[in-house]
Image (tube, rainbow, N blue to C red):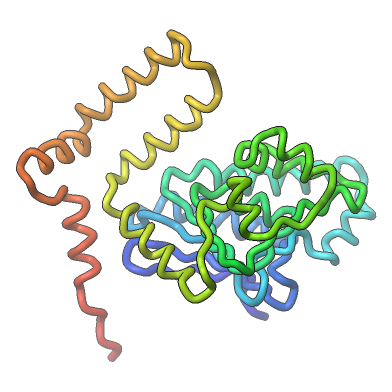
Length: 274
């Protein structure tokens, strides 16, 4: 039986690929569990600086697997609640990774697949990418993915697309901020690699602190407690080892230690197979 998820590590980047192409990468409870465990492992892996989430075959992710939905149809409330919590936990784990995450959206992303895209920090799509919040057409609600999708497109636009279930093409998804950028199919990996080049140039601790900062700032108004909190955050990072190294490297007109380490890993020749 084929793996439902493929994890590759290229230098300091992890490529996580949904691998159910015959089912358009629709997820079930097994894939959800595998994704959660994979995100947790990559979060703890100090050799990984960034993660790309991709899909095999023609689609990025078609949402819920039909067979899984058939099982859910026979569940009672408590079983459905446990199922929904597992999906919510997976999305939360992805969203709260301290490392930068990029969704590689080469094709359709429907329902829960839209949630995966919205929970990543950056989403780059090809012109073949399309999105649809299909839940309403099944008499359901996009509840578990809603925190991430509403954050991406805003409440006003979410009202329309949650209620209509319209298909959103790549250009419209870019306008709605579901996609950070749109590329040709041939240029998709080049666009992502260019972004990764920028990401690995940043400090590991800085990435984690910036993501935490964004969550805090987005959660409330720019009042006195918020202003005091941002001042505390910058003071703390300035005196941290990584902050001191970053400032020193700038003043000394050299590359910071973390970038030197990355370039050393990238330049290292592959080990010959015996």
